[in-house]
Image (cartoon, rainbow, N blue to C red; front, side, top):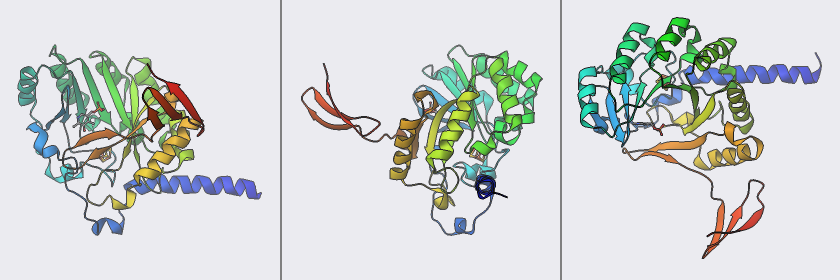
Length: 305
Ligand SMILES: *Cc1c(COP(=O)(O)O)cnc(C)c1O
Ligand code: SF4
C-alpha cells in the first residue's frame, strides 16, 4: 500500500471512530458537575411538554424516545423523567396566546411516533389559524432514514408549510439513505435546515465542518445552527471553548459561501436563552466612520450614513 493511500485509509478510520463517540459512554461523564436542566426549561413550561421561552414560538416535546440517544443530549433528563404531553392544554394555551406563530415539535424524536400519532398532533396544530409554521426537530435522517416512507412524506405534505430541522454533526452521517430520505422530503416541498452541535474530538475542525456544510447544501439542506454543547451533566468532555469556535467560524467564512454557513449560537444557563456569537469585525468607530476587518484580516474604512 502506498503511503498516501494508507493515509486516506487511516483518515477514514479516524472519521468513523470520531463520529461514533457521540453515542459511547465515557467514564469522565461520571465526574463532571454539569446541570440537570441546562436551559432551565422547567420554568418556561406552560403545560405538559409545552415550553414557551420566545415571544412568537414554542416547543412541544411529544416523546422521550429518540433514534440516537446522543451522550451530550441537553434534554437527557427527559429520557427518565418525561411526563408526556398534553395536546388539549397546548391547544388552549395557543388559543390564548395569539402572538405564537410557530411551533417546534421536538422530543426525543417526533418520528419515533407512528405516522398516525404524528398526524394527529400536526392536524390539531394546523387547525389553528394563528400557527403559521410547524417545524419538526429530528434525528431521523441520520439515525433511521428508512422511517421516512412515501406515505410519511405525503402526510406531511398535506399540512404544508412544515419545516424539518435535522440534527447532524459529522459528514460521515450523510449516508445514501440520508440522501434518499432528504431528497424525497425536499422534492415534495418540505424544506430542511440542519442543526449541528460543536463537539470536541468529533467535529471541532474547520475541515470536517466545511465538508459537512458543503455536502448539506449540495443536498439542498440549509445549515442553520452550529450550537455550542450545552452544560448538561456529563457533557464536559465534549465542550469546545468559545474562542476556538469563533476561530473555526472565521476560517469557514473565508472558505465557503454564505449559503453554507450556519450561525454559531449557544444557550445561556439559568434560562438566559439562545445567543448568537460572532467574532468582532468592527475595529474602531469615529462618529460615522468605521474601521472594519474583512474575512482576510484586511482593514477597510467604511463611511456610514
Ligand atoms: C431554540 C428554541 C426555539 C427556536 O428558536 P429559533 O432560533 O427560532 O430556532 C424555540 N424555543 C426554545 C425553547 C428553544 O430552545
Ligand atoms: S437527537 Fe436530539 S433529542 Fe435525541 S438524544 Fe440526540 S440531542 Fe437528544
